[in-house]
Image (cartoon, rainbow, N blue to C red; front, side):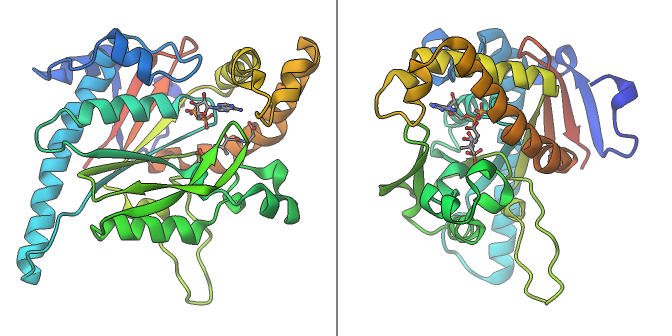
Length: 317
Ligand SMILES: Nc1ncnc2c1ncn2[C@@H]1O[C@H](COP(=O)(O)OP(=O)(O)O)[C@@H](O)[C@H]1O
Ligand SMILES: CC(C)(COP(=O)(O)O)[C@@H](O)C(=O)NCCC(=O)O
């Protein structure tokens, strides 16, 4: 984003890649190439240089925020005269389909869990809170997967509320990209982490305010810090289609994949389907529901056409 397109009233401070990289201070590099190979999502070209320039300063910042927030929670416990438990620090990561949220979430998790004061860092994706396909089909929402109305928002809020309360063994439903549906027999369990990273398209969404007095919290009310991953729509479109092509040669080859039929048809036809999925579902969702949440994030990571983060915006406190 150049200075001309920066929102005039944005409460953020902007950094070039070089300026941000200089804020690493003496944070040690605790990941190597083999860790990155494990953490990188399909078609994500993240490099060690990206970790050093962007993620080490971010890891340092978050470590400072976690320590300060833990002091604040302790102050509240002192005020209330309670001594019970710890309050997990929750980080939300939002942004479009195919922008690279999963890689960011996994790299941050790996870096944050190497700080001595936050050894237990867990990660959940909001796709587990999508309604099962049977419900989406019944409600005519199959072409709206990822839109706010395709999620069981009360279940997501109840999950976050339990986590924030420090409850042990809180569970969430599990989504499978392979079968393109919720896995009915499995759940993921999160057991009182120091930090929880919540990653998903709509984590910064603000539901319409109720007029009947029955207010519900926003998902982001449970966040101590939020990150939006940003890129030009044209670039994300290209990444989505390129990933679809890669998936055709990999995951879609599996006969149990929901998209297996797309591995069997000619490339041109498959690409037309990827284009349709992008333009009818993911692009509409990006424009209507995801991009409008960008200014609400504490940190905005803006990627250039080559997937590298070119600019960082940090909310002024
Ligand atoms: N149809 C699919 N089959 C298998 N894996 C998929 C499919 N679509 C997306 N994924 C994987 O799911 C993860 C999340 O993808 P997505 O929701 O687009 O978010 P992002 O690209 O921002 O991480 C990525 O690791 C991606 O590679
Ligand atoms: C599962 C998703 C909605 C992402 O969910 P999230 O974890 O971000 O809540 C998305 O990857 C998706 O499948 N969108 C539907 C259109 C498509 O197949 O690309």
